[in-house]
Image (tube, rainbow, N blue to C red; front, side, top):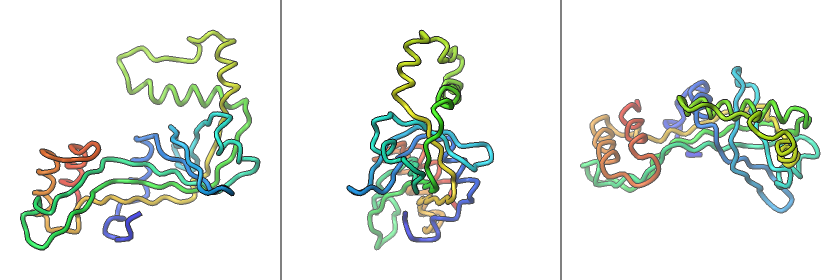
Length: 205
């Protein structure tokens, strides 16, 4: 993550809230052959003590979890290129603004008996955000088909032991300069969710 401490002034609660809302990230562990990563949806407990996810049984991370392992989940938010011209002041250089949160801890396999309840919690979390659509639930599936599919995935839990976030939003610039850059990001931004990034830039302190 960016080393400048000015970009790390969000509280742990802010970072957890961001990760909980995104609920999707890149899970990584160290492996004999090098880092191994997987893109996963996840849920965070209300007390932020643990993070829950599932993996396809054949995933290299699942196969490596013969015992608990250190792990990290990187959660990315909006990001975008910032042109020096947008500041409308001299002697500036290009940069890239972004928000990212890293959660570190110990990842372990859980008993397979927990898989159905985890799948129900995960689907409810996301389906609730599609209201007023009637939510999809596992009981809509033929039991034999559901059982077959669930045998192919495994439940995992990560104890959250570290939280760090980078919110790089031009807060190292004077307010008028930052706000001009935010306006340009809103109108011409190149990246991901640049309008959301512009709104975050406007609110940065």
